[in-house]
Length: 114
Image (cartoon, rainbow, N blue to C red):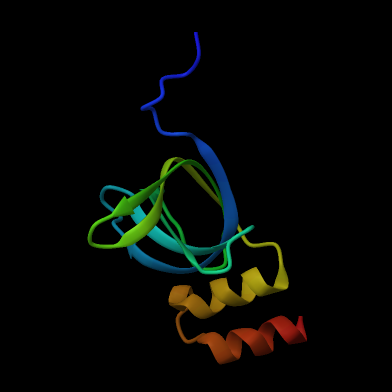
């Protein structure tokens, strides 16, 4: 017999975290905003991750939901963040405030130099 018609469709999403709108270190609940493949605007991803920061690459599995207060979001049942490997990702990570004294401008200079 086929899948239940009322069950949400599981989809995959991958992209570069532009910024983290919210992250609770206690529970791991997070809302990264990512530049995802196939999407023009930033995507709000709602899920759980022990640590997450701008510049990281995320892969997620879940479903699209329309939250009354926050609009369209990707609710991730599975969320994995990987350290940045691209120059853009490294620059965003360094400039995110993760490294004290390094802002977006200095981060771009560091990436260009190295």
